[in-house]
Amino acid sequence: MPTQIHSTAIVSGKAQIAEGVVVDPYAIIEDDVTIGEGTYIGPHTLIANGARIGKNCKIHKGAVVSTPPQDLSYKNEPTLFELGDNSTIREFCTLNRGTAKQHLKSSVGSNCLLMAYVHVAHDCVIGNNVIIANSVQMAGHITIQDYAIIGGLSAIHQFVTIGAHTMIGGHFRIPKDVPPYIIAGGWPVSFERLNIIGLRRRGFSKEALDALNDAYRILYLSKLNVSQGVEKIKSTMAITLEIQNLLDFIEASKRGIITARRHSSSGE
Image (cartoon, rainbow, N blue to C red; front, top):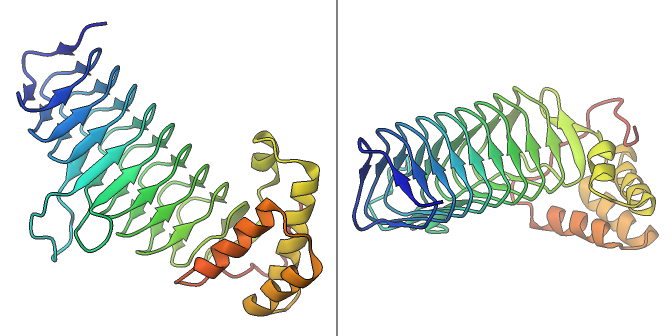
C-alpha cells in the first residue's frame, strides 16, 4: 500500500516516512522524525522532533509523541523517543523524550499496548509485550520490563523498576520496585502471590513455577528480612534462570522492593 497523507496534515519534508504509512487529518509531523512501514498516524496527533517510530504501529487520535520533557533541567538538548514495531498508542497518550542526565531518550518496545491517557515521562524505558491500562501516570526514569501489565489509574514513582511478567492492579501508587513474576496490589502496593496464570500462558514449566513459589515463600513469608531471604535462597535452592533473574533484580534495586501483604500466599 502506498503512503497516504491527508491534505490537512502538516508533514515536514525533512521527516523520513516509509512506504505504507497512513497520516490522518490534522496530524502534525515535525522535521526530525522517522516512521516505519505500515504505521498509522491518527487525526490530531503530534509527532514531534526526536520521534523514532517502528513498523506497523498504530497511534490514535490526539496522542503526542516525543514532546519535550517536563523537567526543569532540560535545556532543549536533542534527545529521542523510540517506539518499537507493532505497538499501539491509544487516544491522548503523552510520550516525552529523554534528557541529557540519563538515557538521552525514552523508549517503548515492540508489541506494546498503551491505553488512553497514559503518560510516559522522560528517560522511561518500557520493554516488549507490555500492557499499560488507561490513565497510568509515570514519573521520570522508570523501567518496566518485558510482559508486565499495569492496571489503570496507577501512579508510578520516579526511578521505580517493575519486573518482567508482573501484573499490578489498578488505581495504586507504586513507590518501590516490584519484583518479577508476581501479582501486586493493595494499599500500599504489596506482594500478593505468584502470577501463576500469566506465567502458564507464557509457557513457564511446572518446575519453574514451583521454584519461584519456593523462592517467594522464603522472601516474603519466612519472616526474614530481604538480605536474609536472599542468602537463604542462595544456600538452599538450585539457581535456575528464573531464580537468578529474581536475585539480580533485588541486587539492582535502588528504591527497595515492595513488602508482603499480611496473610498473602504465593500459590493460587
